[in-house]
Image (cartoon, rainbow, N blue to C red; front, side):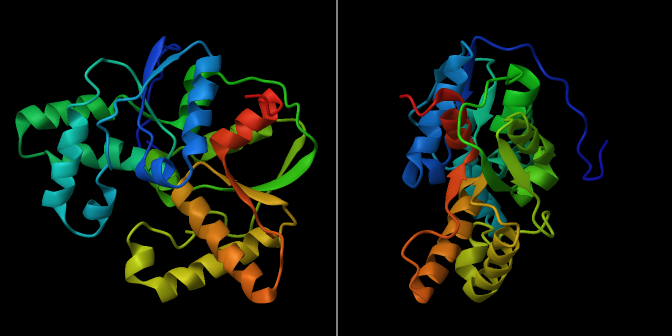
Length: 267
């Protein structure tokens, strides 16, 4: 049992098939991260299945205090992943919702609770899956660079996978990772938090951007698109206000960064 109350989990051998739960943000804002996730997995000889009926994981409703609405959204996902394959999620936030909160949402219904528990046991955040199941090991063929890593609160505190993103980056010998001050602090996104409390969110994001820029990193990498959009968006607004024509803090999803670094930019 670690400090966040997460039990150690056992990992299976590399499977021949997995499901991909792509997340709303990847679907709507950064689809390339989803495509690159598929490429990373297929390169390992894994068939990736994408149920097209998948929607939101239900986290926005759940974190806003609407359990019935969250339960309705979650129920639709429970019935999608019918084969006993791992479900890979390129987001610690969505992964945390499905693995940690789905069983609680259906605690009063024995049949649905059993389904939620079975699904939760098959949920893997992408970096966790690449490190512990795939044993990711590929040559870094990119140019030398210096980056900063941001790990979402849910990946860190609910999934306990903050170390796996770092491990993947550390495996790239031409990538230097600079650690930001107060690395464990939130970026200010928090799903609907950024919409309900925009001034507070902006202040948190401003601090986060400053911490990352102070490292001297040329870009920020994250395995969560919500955090990435919030950090990069805040930096872009600062660039606009200051008249800076080039992004001072570009961001890239971990999946795209790994694929680009280990595939030479080839399609």
